[in-house]
Image (tube, rainbow, N blue to C red):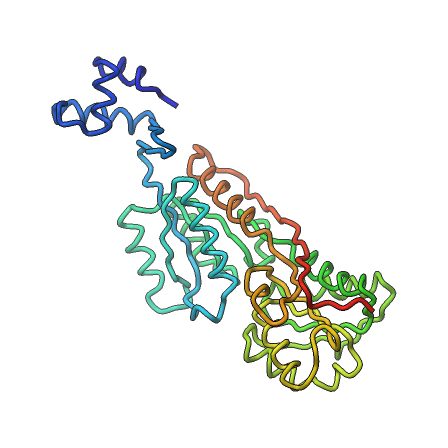
Length: 338
């Protein structure tokens, strides 16, 4: 990092003139201030003052977040994660702009092209549940750095920079958590999204490793919403006569399961133990608060931003990197030991 004394030597002025120029002091002429500020941008000077840092850089220091345009409550986990990305980017001295864009939507790619013409964005974090090869190819063609965070299709793993949770391990941990508390008849509630396939496979492996034969009828399916999970639970109430626990593969679905069970006179965890998956604050404010397999979201957000910033600053193309972090179980009060 260049210093004010080095800037002074480059500009042929005193160090105090540099300091006053960077603080836009009125005693310094307009021409001198602009010349010194241009040198600060050229050499990447960083001013540290009262715990705050001001960057003089040729970069815009703006990151775009590409997401699918879905109603807020249809994907609470993604919206919660976006909040973590925004706050983490701010700490790294980057601004963020959220752009709901998918090539499947009419006019979406035109909006993206028009936005890039403004030359504001240094790079993108993409949070699409399904790999969008049109957007990926377009950004590659334009030379725009981009990194995938969560839920990118595993079929494209080798082609992209991706930061994600190990969802297979998550399914295994959620199920094993119930097995470790003595449960053997364990349902799971899943949905059609790709990461849920990994969680279901982890659920099946945990049962197999414990010597429990998986039953196809114990794998319930619904859409990833409160209402769909509520209805799926009501439709399967007879299974809860035999099962003592359920591993629900998202927290928003877990709230629907708990509500349906309680509506029909079942107590959590005395009658049925419940484990969710996501680990954000939603599980802490239900009645009762429920155990959940948590994604390490602060670490995921920080790693995604670090990877993107590295790509932005790279002078040569880099091979794609994939990072998967291991989830962990948050214990609250929804699992009974048998």
